[in-house]
Each structure stands twice: as structure tokens, then as C-alpha cells.
Image (cartoon, each protein chain N blue to C red):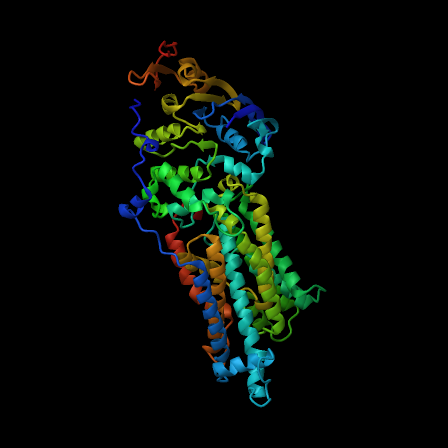
Length: 371
Length: 262
């Protein structure tokens, strides 16, 4: 029988802000302020770039790197001139290592952003461009252009491939208009395998001696071929798309409790999802065009970073980008030096680090959203 | 806020799941939305929230069709709590409640009133002591309370709740509905439990097959005949001697009409 209702909370003004600290029910996780965190991140990134350029078969000092860069930026004597670095040193820094390191930084940042955004939009902690097939689709598009000589620019083709893979994955994952997180990963698996097979086939079809290595570079990712053009493509995509994504942080927050909750908070759910997913495909396309499909950066980094920044996207996204940049530069430095003179595709290094983290995530995630 | 549901209808898969519903929930009070599974309660709530465009009629909020109100403004005036609402994002309670401020946020960052509004919402929902806990670690009753706080952070004039007492124990059900009733805000709550509706609602709307079959004070609406007609169940309607409100006893009683409802 309905007893007289217990004292209504509306009539219980006993809780004051101060009670929160006194209650001892839990303490808010400490979250560092955004701007100082970003500043520290950027300083570490600059240090990472300078240090990683010195690492390699020819031993260089950070000073040489700084002098070479200064020479090219007309801030100091040019290479070969009195006071400048030797021409050979300058060539190693400016032509070989710096483009590679900078491309790695931009790709790492882009993949981390793409992963964080996809995880929010699909409400699936396992979503990233690699697992959902976008990277493989982009690889297929890029390889098709390279090998078949289709008259399209490489990044455009990679973008088209990523977008096609995205549409295919989401069509497989949508049941009756509802996007189920579990199916997104299964759909991505199928699309990813198909596109990888397509990539291998295209390379074999046009076999030119070294096709195995080339297949590995596209499927596992490699920064070995980086040029200043790679730096330009990846950096422009990162800055343009990254700015829009970070600017959409509030809308991404709204998806935490699903589509209806987001709509009830005033978000145009369908439009937001398609616009942001298309931007992620664009970003992925640009990154894959310069580096092949590197896995696990987009999957692992957003989780690691959100443990520090918290899940609010206006904090998570910029920090994840900086940490992604630092991480991939170090992973690539490992890939090119650990087994010197052999070079590993960087995807092997990211997989070695990423898979154990993936396993931890799987074991922790027992919620309904994972089935 | 003045809410008028005027001849509203919509189809799903060709069938009218909400069909020509006319209703005027009283302002500032708790209205119960009743009816068996599939009667159209959730769809009607979505129509009222403006998340679904009606194929017929309109939902009027202060005489303006709700689906014509811009999204953000609508989200500042109407809050909807879904039936099942969970998240894999590791949010704290405070962060969950802060989501309710999204309709007020500017492109870069928070509105100045955000922290204050979140605190206030947490206190009003009696959830201030939970503020720093991880949302995932809360009990069902606590989660529901936090969701209410999130809705209150939207500072809505109209609160829509889809089966807010689902999965709650008896005590949590009672205190939640008492709390919502005492908010003094226009609230429409879909409810399964007729006794809860009878005890707490000022007004009830009864849906069957998408149509409104009864509306009014639960003391006059909830009769033996209505329960049999709508739910296909024989029931005796008694009066709670302490509150004077109806109590419905379901049973295998003979399908004879039982006097009892005042």
C-alpha cells in the first residue's frame, strides 16, 4: 500500500555545497588545468622532434639539428657557410629525418583525434579509423591511384577510400536505423579485411619487384617515404580538420548518453554525426596517404589521455592530439632504429604497444554496449 | 508553461502509434501517462519533446508548435529523460549533470553560470553528496536521481520522464515521484505502476493503441472498468484510508464490477 511518501528531497535543503567535501563519498579525480597541460605537451613535442631527429645511424647532436633548421629558416648561417652545419649533416636533418619526424607528429595527432571522435560518435570505446576499416579503405584508394595511375591526387583517393569504407561499415552496423556499437566493430572488421585484400591484390597485379615490402608498408603503415610534401599534406589536414573537430567538442560531449539524449540537449544528431564522420574520413585519408594504415594510435591514446584530462572533449581532443604526436614520433624512431639496419613498419611497433592496452580495455568493458 | 497536445498523431511502419491525441496537462503539476506496453507512451513523449515531427496535429508550448522551436531553445525549455540511459564514458556525476548545460554553452567552453547551475541542480535533486562519484558506480536509484539533476540543469519549464521508476526499489520509487511532484514544474511521466500514478499524479492520461481513452484526476479516471478495458485485467479499486487516494488491487476476482472508486 502506498505509505505516506518519505520526506521529499525538495523539502530537504540540508545539503549545501560544503557537504560535498565533508561527505567523503568520493573525491573528484584531479584534472590538470588545460592550458598549462597543453603548454607542457607542446614543449615535450618540440623536444621530442629535436631529439628524435638526432637518433639514427649517423650520430648528430641537438645543436646540429637546431642550427640546420635555423639555417633553412634564415635565422642563422646556411649549411656549408662559415658558422653553419656541414652540408652532409644538413642533408640528413633537412631532407631525411626532419620530414619523417614531422610527418609522424602530424599523423599521430590526426589519428588520435580521429579515434577520440569516432569513439564518441559510435559510443564504442573500441572505435578508431583502423578498426572500423577507414584506414584500410584509404590504403586501397591510395594504392589504386599509385599503381593503376588513375588521375587523382593521392590524398583525394585515400579520402574517397576512407569515406567508402565508412559508409560500408555503418551500413553493415545499422539495424533498423539504430547504430549498435558491437556491430560497428564487426562491420569494420569485414570492411577492413576486404579493403586489405583489395590493396594486396592491386599491388600484386602490378607487381614491380618489391611488392611485398610495399604491401607491408601500406597495410602496417610506414613513415619511411616521408618528404616535405608528406609534411604539408598531413599538417594542413590536421590543422583544418582538427580545428573543426575541437570546435565541435561540446556537441561530442552530448553523445555520452546516446542519440536521443543528444537530441534532447538540442543537438542535430544525424547532421552532426555525418559531418564529423566525414571529417574523420578526410583526416584519415590524408594520414593514410602519407603513411599507410597505422593501427592502435587512434584506439589507445584517447583512453590513456582521458584518464588524465577527463572525458570532456574540449580538454580531451587537444591533449590527445599532442600526446598522439609525441607517441608516434617515438614509435617511429623505435621502428627505424631498434633493429638497425633493418627497419620495421611502424605499425608493428604501435601494435606491440596497442594490443595489450586493447586487451585491458576488453577485460574492463563488461557493459551492454560491448555485446 | 502552457502545454497543449492538439490532435497529435504519427505513424511508425505505416501504423498510427499515436493517433489524434488531445490533452492539456495541468501546468506546474505531475501528469501520469498510462497505458499498456506498445500503447504509444514513449512516442507521445518524443512528440511532446519535439524530437519527432508529428504527421498530424501539433504540440503547442505557450501556443507555439514545439517542432518549430529552434533546437537549442527547445532544449532550454524542455528536458526529456529516456527510459534506458547508460553510458560507457567514464563520467563523474558532476560531469553528467553538466551535460544538461550544453544548450547554454557557447562555442568555446562553458557559460559563466554553469558551475552554479550544476551545483543547484545537484542540490535540488538531493544528489550533491554524489557529485564526485563515478557515474558507473551508482545504484539504480542514485542514477535516476542524477539524471533528474541533469534534466534540472537544463532549467526546463517542462519535464518529460519515460518510466522513471523502472528498476528502482519501492523506497526509491516513492521518493523519486514525491520529489518530482513537489518540484512544482509541469511534468509528464510515463508510468507502468497504476498505484504510483494514483498516489502521486494530479492528472493522468490513459493511452491504448495510440489513442487517448481517458484523462483527468486519477481518483475519477482509474476505475475497475477502465483497468479492464485498457489492460484486460480484473481489478478492485479501493481507497487508501490514510491518503484518500485510489489503490488498485489486481487479482483473479470475478469480472463483476466492484464499487469502491470514489
